[in-house]
Image (cartoon, rainbow, N blue to C red; front, side, top):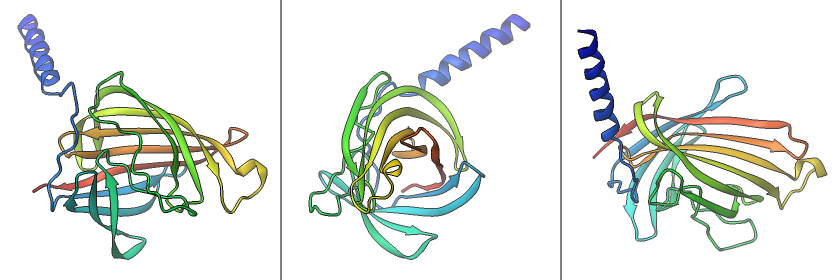
Length: 213
């Protein structure tokens, strides 16, 4: 009986692995689908915000969302590239950048990079080199998902509203978990380090609910 149980466990493990896609193709979300998230400060586990994105239009090169946040009661329109990176621009530029850490199709071992990706406020930019490290199960409030884990190591540079010399540049570490089941991110962590190597931001965002169509 013990040997039979071991064989069954092994077969179940192989079957579970077979269900995990080896390649994640370009996301194919549907209009009307909603992704709800929360962001946590990893220094003290305090919740910083909640937000949700509803897909309202699919264009050839980008996606249009209606975004609502606990910090801002009024919904606003936001745009993302087909690789799910938010479209941003520097404060002195009209040129949008919609590229980021995910370059589809995703396969374990694939590498990519992005250069001078603007911050949300346009006052600086990030650059990073990324690699698809693994496909693994990740658990978040919305459930457990088989996800592609992408790790990025990079740097940040403040361009406008410069402060003291020691706070104008540093390095970053970002890890992203993408699931084909929701055609989106289920979790990501972001760490900022100052020039001297001291970490000053550690945040984690995780999926709390996915409303499919």
